[in-house]
Length: 596
Image (cartoon, rainbow, N blue to C red):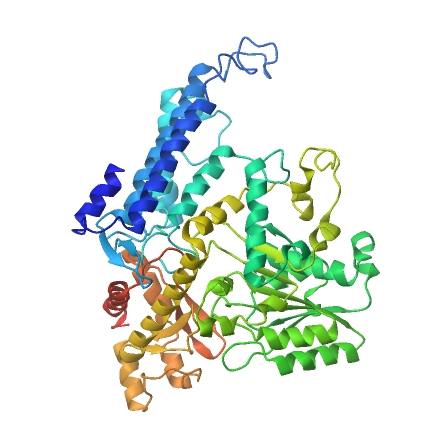
């Protein structure tokens, strides 16, 4: 409380009401304190151990490596020290050299531009640091036999891991589709680690079982669905969600496959995704035995969205060759370009052809929270899908991994995946109607619902909507800065959460001027071949230079409408990417890249 309050006062805004960051800082601080207190009360050292030297059950029958009271106490102290490190390190990542800034939605945030984004090191350097701290390699004799010295050695190695890890809370960590964590969700993650249970049955995780169904019911309501006609789960990641959707669709269309496998299906069952769809679909069709030849990649329009006319033609071609169309995987926010498919039109095709429609909203799915008319238009038709998924750990900032998967079919998951394992799932148990774990093909289930529930309950639907709209506003603001600056050029028309652009070194700008190519454009047209060739290694070299400086991480990647690599900005999590961050990123790119 004192630490967070002092930061608030340092902002010279102590006269105003406590900020969002002050409040959620208190939440996290309270959570760390609670974990320390409850861990202490739960993990009291045992007076004896089944593996102690005095026990007849000692596995070796000797006195070596006995787990006595002091060892238990030492392990406890390691956890306490790690929680203390967590509080200081995570706080510094977000608060050191901080100032209070304003978000686009009117709330406040903390910035730390002067801190390092990463300590760039080679694998050899990291290995050497771990060896110096205590030794990387696993050995027959553990550190626990060394008493306090072993604890200290492990502690040194763990702090080295922390030192060399990327600071994903840094404002210029833009490398992945996740970023700074939402503090309310982080507090729940700490609790999730502490309770250390699996949410497959109510008896194993009573409050989380109730919370997960509540989250799923709220998601259904957001889509305009009656939860009584739905089924769903929290799942570890969008890739597993896409696999789950394909498996549900196969069982829904061909129920005999649950017992008879793919041999029970008609010839050539075929699935369709856009050329911009996530690569996990390729893996999923292999996992369930359909084969990649039976996944059709539908061409896209100039903007990157699925071409519905091409989808109709592909389905027609499949039927003409004796195949059976059964699944269409749509995308709400593709990884590279950020595209949204025309869901309403795709839904019309699926209804006519009897195909399952899945919407992979792992990245852009939270657009369903937005109240803006243009954003609502983007997701129109999602409510007509058979299944929908989105990752709160991406756009919304929940800790990794947090994913919602929901079907608009009440029995879809259970009928598809249930194995009725009697030792775990038994309707005679108290509150067995909350045992939703049999709906998945996995067994152990992390208590991910707790993280998203805390975030959603703390911010409310309106707060998440403001957050989503603020990220959209920042993306378009940066796009305008890129368009106006002669050292940059937009590579494709931006979508709400993705901006792809080129950095143009001095030599390339001179070449473009000579060939009459303007940098002040915002289109999907490809660069002339000579310009693209001149840019062939720029993005690769510039990314490496910025990483070695430790100041920023921005990804380069291929994009369908260009032959040269582009940079991508996709704002994730509880990031603050305002004018200062935009200007700093552009300044760094010019500093390290202008002479390339």
